[in-house]
Length: 143
Ligand code: DQA
Image 1: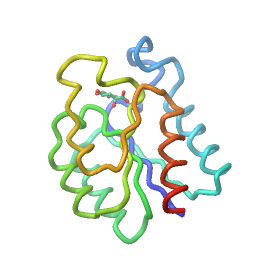
Image 2: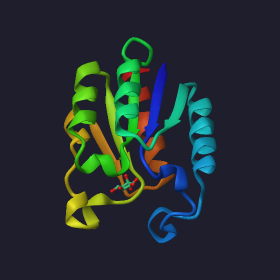
Image 3: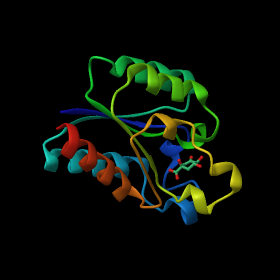
Image 4: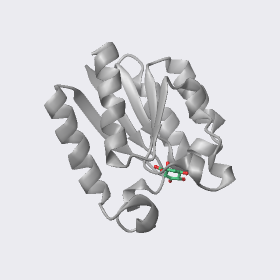
């Protein structure tokens, strides 16, 4: 099984950005964590990050026919990107949304998630472990 793991804007700044919210581990630490988790489960993974909405739309479209499932942390685009929602609907791959923080315990503008409408499941507030939960869910169901 091949899972595409997409991380949106500013997640490349993990460890530097708001450590009180996102922790002190870096984006490189997250990539290592994801690669280890996928190797342990026997899942093939591509871990990819972009700060650009259109690039994320392109990447989701490219997953059609090349990946079996998507794990996505759209970061700030979560709260207003209908384009990312539409791309997920267009490819119709099983998808799980992940957020490091609990977006529902934060500012009201973070309580809306557009991509969630095209995702089977949302995992939030569990830090890096939330990605593992998403991967395990997809592997158990589609692997
Ligand atoms: C985030 C939550 C978003 O509200 C925020 O814009 C992010 C990261 C998270 O992982 O908790 O950049 O998606």
